[in-house]
Length: 325
Image 1 (cartoon, rainbow, N blue to C red):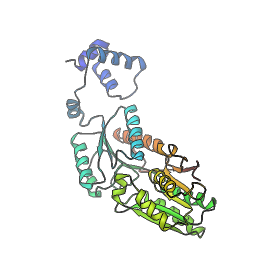
Image 2 (tube, rainbow, N blue to C red):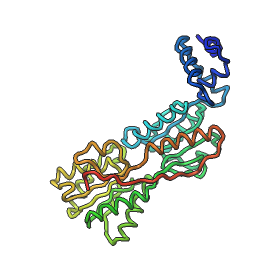
Image 3 (cartoon, rainbow, N blue to C red):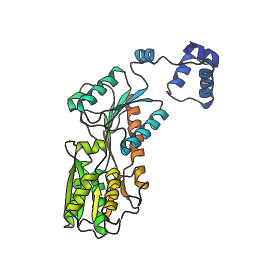
């Protein structure tokens, strides 16, 4: 089996230079990188990650913990995080917590045991005490931890304001908001606060629905939506906390012969791919998932390098108008 010294001999470089190339550390010229890549392929060299982790006290792996791998929003987040992690020389260890605090805590302990360079946490059910004494960077997405390293969020409150402003500007007077998930506390809850504040300002009342944990995991809101629209037939504007809910609202409206956007205006949240796959296409609040992912990886990398990082970053959102308004 080829060793690091064999690769160095093949390239004519020092072992320290080859190590820097393989670990993507510091400036590496294109020519040097190509030499090492060619030698690695020729010699079929595979780094010993276990030995490296013992020597370096960490691996070049990032632990990524999410609550729902198949949800369109988290699927897009995972894809972007993996891309930017790879560009920065990191591999990803993906964990699906399903919002179970026991499972999340177990994954955190597992990541530490595997000597990951840091953790990006997109799931928020573990108790704060779990993070006490952890000496690797913890970057949270859409959750702020006092004992975390840094957080990256979007302006959820402003998203609620933009949705209310648009629906009211469209002439809607009987609004419905599909908001908070039952027992889960999330930054997304502030979308409701922003929506409520603008509606109060304009003296427009709205009905708020709280969804169930099971609906979030099954991604099936249709029965609830159908019952609600039958109960409130005067509804002419709806703001949903996700594009998944908004897309299923379109299905229910079709079943109940409610025309969109004629009789009903609909706005979602996230602006993931599903928003452009529906007919009509969804008006939605764009959440900057790509930018949030890039920033999370950069913050983690800077923290690994011992740099000071901004504790809390909130990125702006904006309305994307399509066919449902």
